Amino acid sequence: MRPILPISVLVAWTVIVCGGAYAVTTCSGAATATAGASQHDLVALKERFRRPEQVPFPKANPLTPEKVTLGKALFFDPRLSRSGSVSCATCHNPSLGWSDGLTRAVGFGMVSLPRRTPPVRNLAWATAFQWDGRADSLEAQARMPITAPDEMNMSMDLVVERLKAVSGYAALFRDAFGGEEPIGARHVTAALATFQRTLVSAEAPFDRWASGEESAIGADAKRGFALFTGKGGCAACHSTWRFTDDSFHDIGLKTSDDLGRGKFAPPNVTAMRYAFKTPSLRDLRMQGPYMHDGQLGSLDAVLDHYIKGGERRPSLSFEMKPFEMSERERLDLIAFLETLRAEPVTITLPQLP
Figure 1 (cartoon, helix red, strand yellow):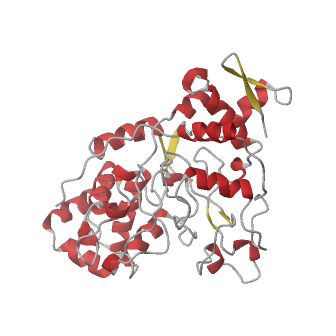
Figure 2 (tube, one colour; figure 1 turned 90 degrees about the horizontal axis):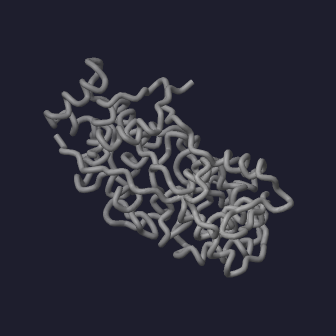
Figure 3 (cartoon, rainbow, N blue to C red; figure 1 turned 30 degrees about the vertical axis):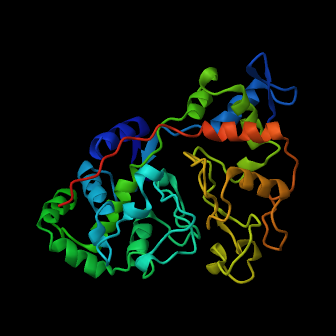
């Protein structure tokens, strides 16, 4: 069982520590259930997407403010890269929604990588990490970009050696972990994972509506929610309060040599070929790019893709089916997605030791 902390406390703490298938229509401007769905049904549907009250932390790596402070410093420290010029925050920039705004990530030696940088918000609830799910915890994920030759290109031994050479880090590690082996690879990844678990989206207009504040979102967004959970079928994969099922699907994108989850699945598991993790729609950057490799540059392109149902092949998810969408429905769906955006949590750069 994982210890948990109330989200309201966590978000406030982050500001301090970090520096700071139901149809709905409208009638006279108010959303009402159609004959096919009662108000009770709508309340139950909203409940599926309601924000949890607490943020979970694993028992093996509990939350402490000292660990968050250390993890934040490490996250922004370029000395964790071989070149000494790239930090975790280089690609996961808080000013760019904890991503980099690029079609594809740029790695060691300014080489373009095959995948887009995913945001790192709301990962405390995640059950799989990386686009292909090859990491099963935030602690495991934290090590991967550091040690990947085409990303930060370091070894954990060299990371520890560098950190031990910085006098200011000794106290930070001691405060976070006590006297036992104060600077070590396990503590580096534990601190990084703890800091990332504090990166939680603030309350969005949709959350207030889901909690009963009818005026929190417009009639167009309410129709968009009906489309999202109904005819559009979006909620089949973009489920839970984070609007992701943390699972893997081939949605029929143009393929490359990248098999995604299929690289780690048995050859006879056809469904995992070209399958990638469902991205969260919380705080979606409305200008794109989108998909694991950034191949769709706009929301219009994304909607066109889903309307057509993707490229037909044996691995295509059974959820992918062509459907019709009017121009008004497109606008309504976009209006709904905009209600998932919250005001960014204030964060300032740390003073590195």
